[in-house]
Image (cartoon, rainbow, N blue to C red; front, side, top):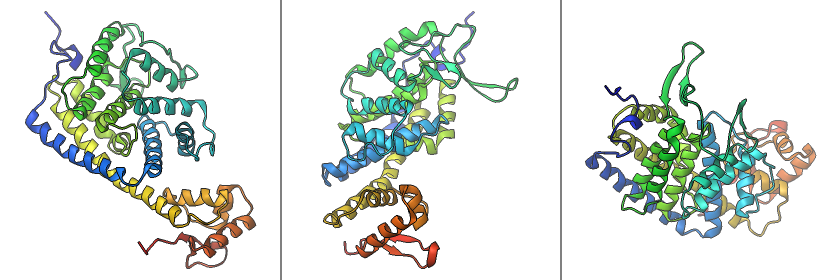
Length: 375
């Protein structure tokens, strides 16, 4: 007698997914409207502004994708690494370590080369880029192949303390992975008539369920999602971050994945959550893009002014949403200059009408950006 299935990949219907079209179709229609508005909005400002928006979005996507896994990256290092690879002037400001460089390599390969097929070799390269030293924490990581854990040590997603662990998911035996990945890649690269946004949702679930690597499966799944979304947009420029929205909804993300992997091949609930999350990601991008527009407007307004590197760095930091107070002491600390130099930099910007003094006086004086009120 066959043992009843615990996970979706053990079902005889796997991987022939089903869903309720009447529930999914309206979500896809709504997403297409949002997608068209967003891409149309970003087609008007010009390539320089598009590059800045892309730089900001890719940086955010990389940082938040790692945060989902509990890893905190230095955003300045990530931004610098992305900028260098895109040939933008912001590169070189903050040197990045090999780990950050590897993650950036993976994400940019996924989105800028979105037309290229997704192959096993490409995935092996991404995995190697994620773990340039061949280790994840204290666990040795084998790159350049699928995982090969023995059956007595299954690949599991576990939480809790020793003796009180909860197994959230157990992946297919390693011996099954090559065939499982062959089927997945064949489907992914097939130019079928499936809606590309729907395909992104299915690809994410399918890849995470196979769990083909020792580590890094979540980040690679989100890179695959980014690749498929770029195909849907028809552009390697990214103006919204799915990973940033998943980070905000991380608990729901893991819960929906877990319940779907323990359910049937009807994945309507997963598709609904994924597509709704993507819609929220597109909505959230409006604030990020408004910040980019504000930055571009300021630099255009003050195009003829001579500003030193410290002033440019600090103004960009403020425009990127810096939460601290702009004081002479903070300025000196961030730019690595003396307080006297910071005061001269700030006073020069006040004289040029870019900064204004706050109500405080003396050493506690704070400075604010002069908002452009003349349209």
